[in-house]
Image (cartoon, rainbow, N blue to C red; front, side, top):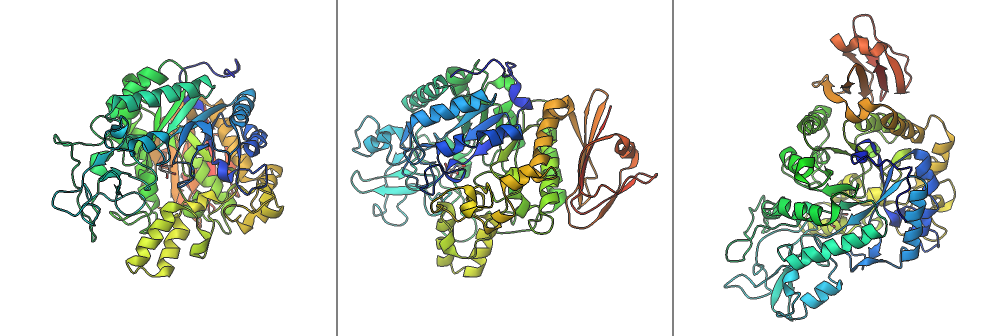
Length: 580
Ligand code: NOJ
């Protein structure tokens, strides 16, 4: 199952690649159990090849109790029967390779499932050899073991409540930054690291082409000399503190990633992307500077935090200001211009759908999806497309709590209700930000359940599938799908898209996102009205760029530049112009 010769052998091939994420549970169901599976994914590979993507990132399909939809792994080396068999996975890998694409596996090694044999052993007794593979700590001195306040630190979990779970049998707590069924591995222990590397090498032997590393910048925790972990600052009310200063981008993170690179990744022509919440531009340079030998690129979250109240959580909704978005994306473009590399994304399985979030999923769904895709895909970096994004799938628009399934959403909703937050506010935040927005089944066609399953889907299908579906989009040359296809083609055919410099235009404009990419004598002007009103802007000295060859446009396109450099764009109109 080796890579076919047709694929680019250049070590930096991932710089001109576009990645497509499959979240298998919601992608395509082949056996009618209502849950997507590997054979379903195999059946849709031609759709991905037609879109023109280079790499498939497969969210976890490993054995798992599914407490966090597979991000809680109980066997790294086998496929969960919900998704199929190892033979199915091998067929998927072969099918991807046959079509000239590559495949990236999700690597979830900050934590395992509490049902992983390593943890089962670890919790079996205090002197088990695997005890130290996880973070076990005694109760806080002077507190009744297991009682409120006796937790070793005050850290709050990403999934609500404390990060510590009391284990009555052995009289200690274990750490879980996510759910209590996701205990954190102790990367301080070299045997843990070696076990992870050996597992990664086995996946590479099976022919996979890289890894997406789940919350990998949480693996190094700050431990005090006496072995304790520090308390965090308590923001706002409540008793839980912020543990992130002690577990994000921790003291040994670069040492661990460099070791992983030396032992597993180096010299194999792979693609690696590290998910790094809380990473700054300076952190990202350290992770992705090729000279340091860590990873190719990171998923950072700054632009995903711009539509929330500053200092609040993602559930504290605030409107997005386009100037903030442009300033942020520009800072990342400029910050990684000399060393390192950006990943470019709007959507994934943890984020709401961009057309509903930053676009207009009503009357302007198609042009707004195209405009958002345009401004993202023509930046410098590696773009990621999340299943369904390529034809403009929208948020779920659920109206009752009973419709949600996601553990993060449900835990937060319960906690918010306990704090007295009115249900309508809870529902408003969930409708805007719940991860289930991205997880509704892919809408393949107009048939019942959108062609996703013949059974009962695990999460309801969006009723708008009669209008928003892959089949309709593929059949319509003016669709969002063909717009994405052309954007991908531009990356593959124009070196300026991959390698060109980036210069922002109109930074203070609240409607228009515009920039110029330059390589040698080539200039690529990207201009889009990201608002539902017409926008008139003055391009000044750059107006001449409007006179080049329009290589992609969406919207009426009637408005041109007046002689004085002033241009008017229709609502959500976008244009890409090449000058050589
Ligand atoms: C990030 C993943 O993308 C998310 O889905 C998951 O819940 C957490 N990491 C924990 O693994």
